[in-house]
Image (cartoon, rainbow, N blue to C red; front, side, top):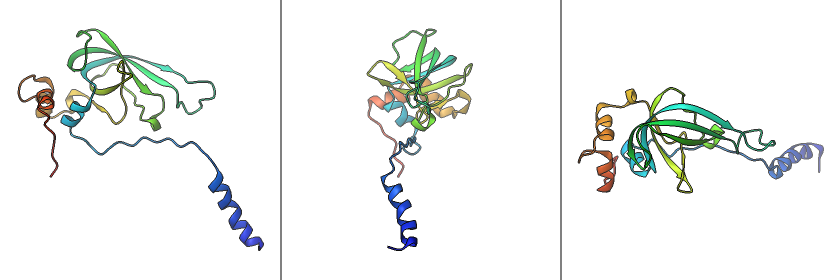
Length: 165
């Protein structure tokens, strides 16, 4: 084997056998708010009042095991919320944005559609619906906050889905 072949082959062998942890966040397209509402475990309109960073173990340099905890005061509940309006709920997010962790700005009022861990801990990620009320269209606002036959909640019960054909 020539020296030139060895110089080319050796880096290839090293790359093939090198093991590394790679994390990344991938969101599934751009779903319609109706679909996100129906698939969410909870939907609320609330004000973010505090954030707390809970670090992972000492060797967790990339914050893969860390958690952001946000305390949110409920202004309006739409789905999956048993707490009263005005009470506070804790919502968790991954500590690393590569794991779809997200940042909720303290002091902002947001519409949040998220999931649950073990049916109890509320979670939110960068792929979930996180919007300020001013960013919604009048129709979206109406469908979110109304309770009648033209609401996102009613359409979920009727098993309506959005078609993009």
